[in-house]
Length: 74
Image 1: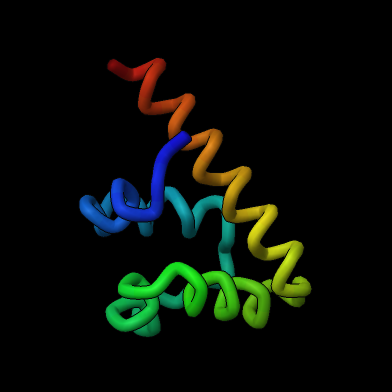
Image 2: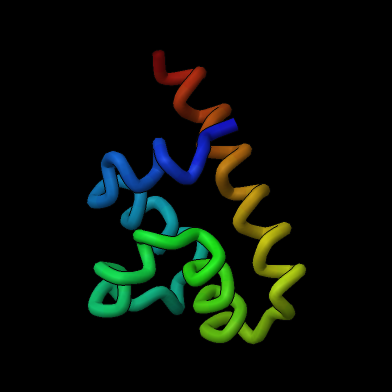
């Protein structure tokens, strides 16, 4: 599973992949959101009309799939 730290380490690539999964993300909001996972998940919930728990689950699923993709690419 990919971690939040790994995702934010290469934010340009990570954001592009997240935007594919979560199309309502707005790049202009990201500079401050990428610093705090809980804040990002709350933003994700708000932008995608999810509960905070749904947003956490969806984001955890995204990180899991990204981790699998990374293993496959290596």
